[in-house]
Length: 302
Image (tube, rainbow, N blue to C red; front, side, top):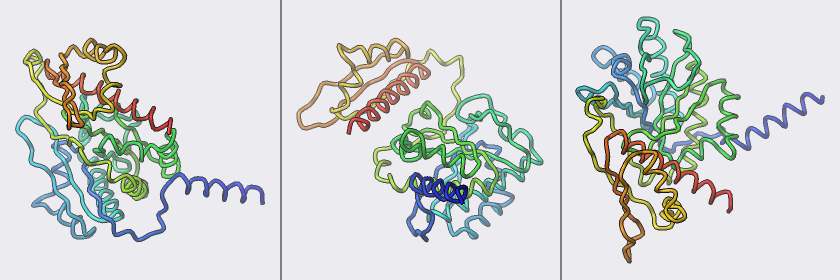
């Protein structure tokens, strides 16, 4: 009797942390998934048979971006209702599982963002990886308070979930790597979809990642310039007392960072970052990291 009561209370606690699946939601969602050029061939299939059959069976829209010459990355997009998208992604995961029996090097990459984040090795034909591209502003709804949501998803559905610490280049998206069996990935994606929809409005203003040619180490000295805009109410925190925080970003990244003056009637200020592509990306990641920390600090004070 005691054990039964404990189990009931535990299930109730989990339900409070995770969204309920007891609905037939017709809400639409769009997923972006990072895949390698090799993986894309498995997901498309001969004459498009794999992707076409998944579209038809799950009633979703699915497509894969064109391969940029010199790049190893493509983007798989899947759109439809919450559960249909989860089903479609699990079918794509199954296609990767099937392919792994014939090609052992599908995930053999040594650089971010294609390099596997988890140290757990895939079991050929049984487990696989999906690399979800998630706007940074939506990470909170997946993680939950003090990381409780993500812990419950991993525990309840027996999958590994790892989020990249850094943003993908020239974007405000982060990588969320899911690893597990096809069935467990499907179950977890049904919940993750509902988490994301809870905070759907946060995707406004997202700078989406676009695959690009991998930088050649011989070209790291070529200077590039990029700009970022931040709301006036957060700029002070990014600069820090007496400029200490922005000076730290400049020093660590090696990039030059200029900040526009505050203009009456405009609620944003422009950060202009100049340096090698590597230094610029490092500066951007540091700025977004500081932004995330400040937003979390303010949220905890509410």
